[in-house]
Image 1 (cartoon, helix red, strand yellow):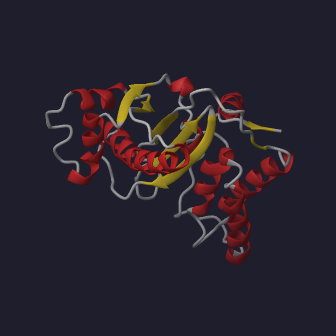
Image 2: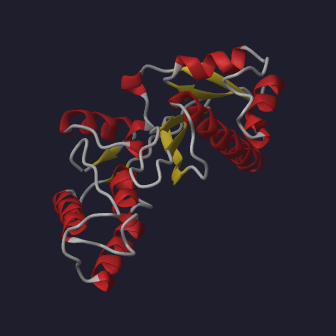
Length: 239
C-alpha cells in the first residue's frame, strides 16, 4: 500500500458492491496465513466492509495487483539452529485508525531464525501517547510468550526463559526499569501491567531494537517500496 494513505469510513465517494468487496477481502484474509507481508494492507481494507466506496475499492485493487505480481512468494523456513531461541518483536501505530483513533498493534515472533507467529489487532482502548500504545502492545506480546513457551515446552521439553521482547521506543523500556507507578502509567488499566510481573520473574526481557530492524513494522504501517522489501526479506518472504 502507498505510505501515508489515509482512508476513512466517512468517505463521500460512491458506494460499491458490498457483497463483491466482502468476498474479495475475505479471500485476501485467507491468504494472510501464508503471506504475513500483506497483513497490514488486508487489515486496513477490512475496516471498510460495512460501507465500501470507490476509494476503498481502489486500495483493494492495488493490493490485488501486488498479490498477482508475487504469486510465487511465501514463507521460507531455515534449517534448525543448534540452540534456537524465541524472540519477539512488537510495535504499535499510535492512533493509527483515523475513525476511532485506536492504535493497531503488531507482533512478530521468531524461533530459530524463522517466523512462527505473528499478530495484528486493533487495541480496544484509546491511548493517550505512543508510549502507552507500545506498553499495551507489550502486554499482548507477553501473553503470547506464555502461550508459545508452553507449546515449545511440550514439543522440546524446555519452555525457555528470558524471552527477549524487542521494542524501538526507549520510553517504554524506561517504564520497565522504573517499577514505581507514576503519572505516565497510573491511568493505565491494571490488566495491562500483567507484563511487569513476567519481566520481574525473568520470563521475558524487554530490550531495545533499532527502528530499522523492527520486524513488527511490517504489521502496523505501509512503508516505501525499498523499506518494505527490506522488511519482507527480514521475515523471510521470498519467491
